[in-house]
Length: 246
Image 1 (cartoon, rainbow, N blue to C red):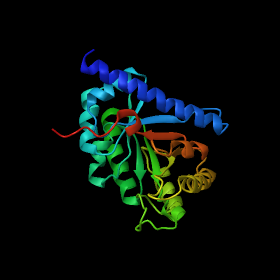
Image 2: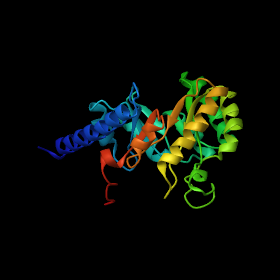
Image 3: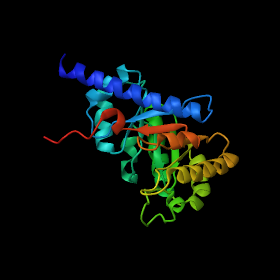
Image 4: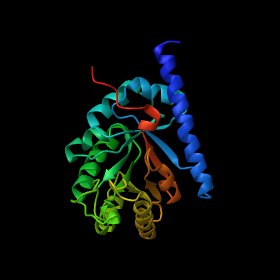
């Protein structure tokens, strides 16, 4: 068995293990459907993305534009959905909209404006579908902290979400998909994701189609599923540790 075959078997085994966890957590939460799995491929080569695609993976996540853009071009699979999940600078918007199906880290009005401007140009060029936008919420309050304090993982304060949602919904080329968050460091993920579920419910009252909840990673996907997550972002439990730099 060559190294590529060995890696394919490893990825298949890890993927099956994670899907088993998702299935059991979905059953435990008495949910009718499993949430979507986004396999986070940051730091891993395009060859891994191709292997994952062969295993039926339809959604991958990246958090650095330079790496994501290069991989998307190398893999060149129009049926594969690329999700940008990292903090995004406005000056990267033009690049991101060339390959990304969604951005899970929309956290400020200036980024909304940059993405809207970039999408207007890109849709004129190729008629691409609207960019799915998830509002990143800072959940540090759930752990007794603040966005700028210990435990903060980025995102907009909950009080800013309604105005940010209106900005996305009012921008041509952007679709308000829902909310995204990362559980605070050292905090209780149950409390964090329950807080996120409440924020999502309030958002849906004003924007009924924005039902997405992007939450849950390798260490807390069960808690996220119990709280209603629709999209999970799992990397290390499928791909393993970050490859060594030679």
